[in-house]
Image (cartoon, rainbow, N blue to C red):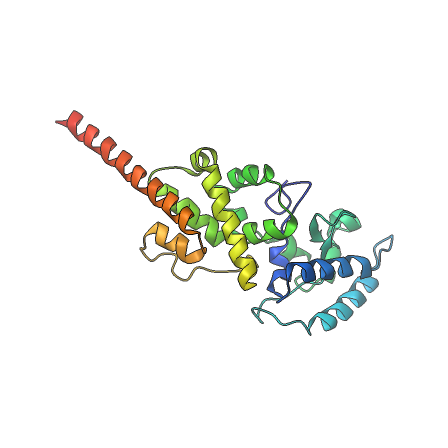
Length: 251
């Protein structure tokens, strides 16, 4: 499995751009269903049919407003199962049996198959993947989370500042992490700000309080902020005690 497809029940399609469209969750679902039903299902795989479909669908979707006009929206993202639970590339070699079938897409097979979002490149990707597998999400919720490497990094930074590693964080503080992710998705839906996995943090290297960065990124509830403040205080209290004991032994 991978961060793209960590579960039999959900998957992420943020890098394919569909969440760049200014559509509601219901409208995105209908669009994915339309794509899945419209793309000709031929065996063996027909490049001509795929290219004709792409041309028609791109022209049709040009009418839909976008959050960022520079981000391409690939019409080959659709449902991989009849349950309409998992999303992915409709012309991936796994489905077509043709190694370079993704050359019918705008980016081509080499780029599509080589692309790894920052979350996949993270040294903690396996820890997050294991954590995600335990959740009961849908593709829409999961894409808002997996397609947002900045928010996940800010969560990590908050705990790392008080010497709590990612593995420990996901085990001992799983409830507060889940609450942060839940509120992140809720705030996204309110503003219709969808993740595409291409977001970049222009202030990533600027020194700033880790809690302030997290609160600035995610519209957290007051109760959640208070819980994080308490964890922060307790963490620094623990670190100060460790440092004091170390200095006492040294003298």
